[in-house]
Image 1 (tube, rainbow, N blue to C red):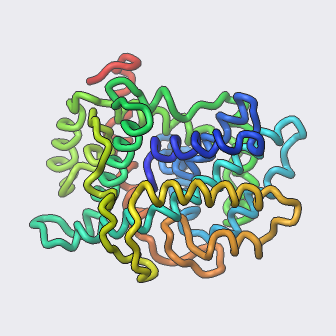
Image 2: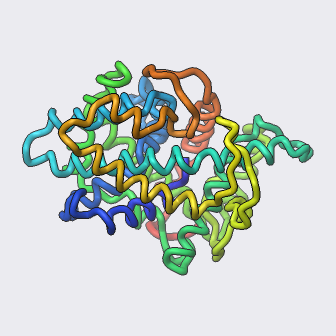
Length: 351
């Protein structure tokens, strides 16, 4: 998944161009930007033990047939009260944008990930793919932040700037999840699952905030020595104070690369894909909110590829993509290690 800031800035760009379609109130804007994080908050349900039956739900959504899922998301608006529909509609629009960016950008990310893991670097294999994947997307986040605002996390705190939404907004979206998970995946979460996931995601973002890299060193020691991991998952995910307009992974020189899922030969780079996805998102939003939007139109919109950009069968669940489960396990380990430290941290401070 492109990381939290990349999705947020993508959503802000789309909102600036299509706010008339999405909604103009603060709650609608917050819901739309939350939607741009897609199912990713669900990976942090690991902080809430009573949600254990749903720890893998984020993985299931990323591997599900997206057309069926998107249809269920739109249908979930029908279970809302009339005054809740604008917020729900805005969230659904953001969720569609998340899918659009994920499915567009992931082939480049995975091509870079597989190339690094297969490069013959001593001690680095595809078993370390989660850490490599996270580091690529972390560096994209840092590049996007500096490109968009000319600053780094020294001045921009992701946990304070992203994931806004009142309890009322979260409750509306929670109703939607209870419905569309049942409809598309035959999974029955409680209405408070999504609010819990977002609040956990906020907590994890605070734990990941360490612009002077002190926590990076601590986590690296814990993960590599105590958990016997080859590399630190925390260190690969936590943002750095990195003022950069470029990334080693952005393919700005437009060198040839192959989509690892389809074999398509391509030369586009990060910003080409980012901007093309915004154009695609605008068209998709218009189609999504037409009265006649159905599964056939949804399949035409998605092109039959999942959140990773990998072709999927027309079914609710698809085999493969085992890396997602490993990544969630990594998040669970980090949560167990770090959540107890949160009570000792002053808001906004750097350990």
